[in-house]
Length: 203
Image (cartoon, rainbow, N blue to C red; front, top):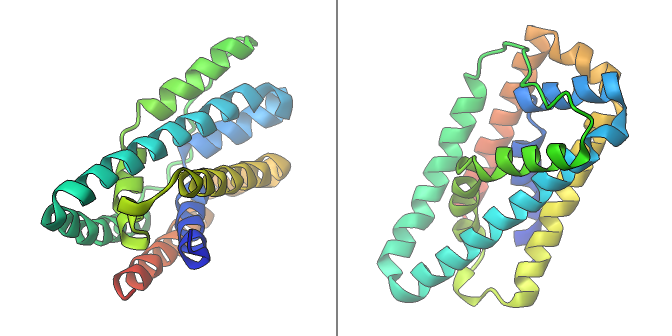
């Protein structure tokens, strides 16, 4: 994999995954009330679920690229448009600070299945990968090693983002209680996402 493609992939994913929202609020609140060990099964399930969506996106795009060239070109430019749409959604996102509750039970297995359900039940994750991947890599030529590099990059980014929120849980909770701070964070993320879309479009 070209290192610049991996960097752009990591940067766009960092913006998308790091934007504060209800799931981050729930994660932070849970860490503060129950400790960081309690959320590890939930986080692990979400990372696995993301890997599954990423794999589906790569396989699907590779098939389209090899079989329907013009359709793939259309998907590629639709991807840039979708990233701009995500930027607009981030810019205009409401600043309510309520979080989605995680299971109260201490069962690690229940937390794991909740994380899988939350991730696999959200097709927007695969839409993000479908939009991003064809704009930065030649998915028709992705090898097993290339898939592993993308997956490893994804895991590193997600683990780093979640670790930052967990380690700064108290400060982050205060941040998420401030509508003004959330608005600034959302609009900063939106600007970064739009910049990524512009960079991709000119590649």
